[in-house]
Image 1 (cartoon, one colour):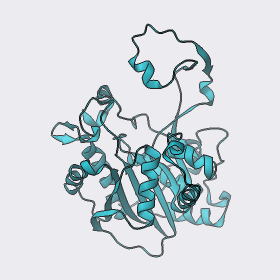
Image 2 (cartoon, one colour; image 1 turned 90 degrees about the vertical axis):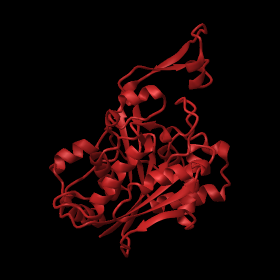
Image 3 (cartoon, helix red, strand yellow; image 1 turned 60 degrees about the vertical axis):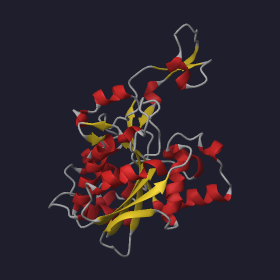
Image 4 (tube, one colour; image 1 turned 120 degrees about the horizontal axis):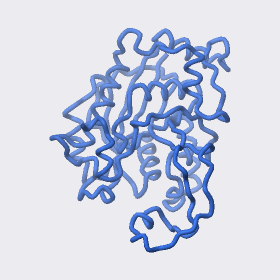
Length: 321
């Protein structure tokens, strides 16, 4: 069974909040850019998939244990991770192939960046090339979702800019998945990627998330989060409500979808001439997907898979110590 994985890496942001004159992912720490650390992790994962070690993808947990690990919320789709209880012949075949370690993978990376940063990102990429994969660039847009859709459109129309190709052409492709990842999350782990991969193979979507442990307050007269960050604390705020944290999830990336469903989303938005203002209302891919395609499945995220936003976040990133 042949599976194609596309990693869309969103790296078109600026370093404004990070306090850097360039893209924050090009910030150099210990003689390496921050991006190079993420890239190293992803290349290692791609190499394992393209030439897996024995038992690499066999389930190390029992079906019951894996089910409890994948089901984050009680109201999410019920996972049936035994072949006998699989909800379709296709799911049974996927699970059996996964357990027997006979799935074959091809990997494609698409880095989304601004043209002014392309040379530096390309230099990082070429220092650490995957054994079997394709790597290309796509031009970033004005906001996150517009960048994602622009890259997706470029890939579908074969308009990405290739910078490396060394891949086995697996035909036919039985399923094609798209991992959309915010490149500012530098520490995505192989274990999380494996869990997202299996979930998306079985159920078409996989969104990593963590329960919210802090008390969340919604303020009445705050126009934007940046307004609070910039205040001198002499302003007076009133809270309209404290949100029930038991019903909240903090979402991470990569968020995984089938290419077929993302193509449906792209076609719908193109046909209805979705503009930048509309897309800016959606802060992640799952919210856009839920608005126009359907519900998603959540899996447990990873506390170490945190996002780099300001320089102080460097202290939280264990991989950078």
